[in-house]
Image 1 (cartoon, rainbow over the protein chains, first blue to last red):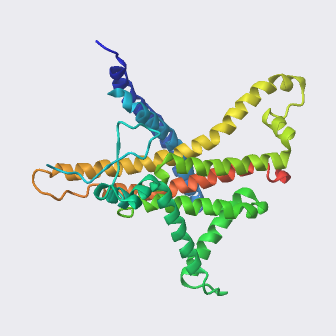
Image 2 (cartoon, chains in turn cyan, blue; image 1 turned 180 degrees about the vertical axis):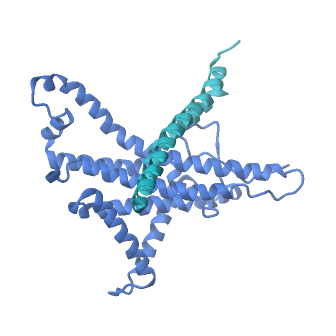
Length: 79
Length: 269
């Protein structure tokens, strides 16, 4: 058989994106959970807490996006 | 023969050229599809993202011009709305940067409004978000990088900056570790514009691909029964609304934090 790179990428590239999504899922769960707890303790500060939570969520989400970008770059090699 | 008008985009050349990404058509690709030989269409098609960027900048300028036509002490209407936005943003930046942050509010405000307008423009039918192209986001990230490095060198001096990057060594142990810390800090400084650009690009392009893929699905589901498909991409356009606002805010706030870290105000040290 010829080169195995297509097979290898077809197994590993979606798996990589899935693992990145798993990591960011855990991270976001913890971040949003702490935000919920903080809002429960001080409902007055919920505006500020929400803003900071959204910003933190966007930063964590970006790591999954990097994995997706790598996926698109190697998509070409998958034949 | 089923002819999909959803053209595949060739613009994202940094990703790859053989596999094209599904995006919704905009008026330039539409014109290019029907009149490919007209010189004006060729010009528009090759400068597609810049055409949209300049269009957005002109629209923002006109909105601002209309807003300040009648300068009233008690603002009404459009002037009220614009002043509300400017004031809220000013408060946000000053909260992070302190009183001296007022000098950076015009730059950061422009960044925020421009990126927000660019992201939201793609949701208008037959228009495209220019920030789904890596060239545009890298240009914005380079602007921020240049400002931050200029502020670094202005506030700390060139040798003071290198000293700060090496972890401000005072004792012998710290001087030994300084070269390693310097290399690490340099990499992290260089990674900042890269992550800024890639984050905005990845998020906006991801949303575009999502919307395009679901639009194709919506048309393809009923292709054998009718010539009109279901608009399955509408829930994802609401999601695109949310991520557009978030990404503009994150870009601007991160730039603010980088300006803060460049030692703009020394009184808190």
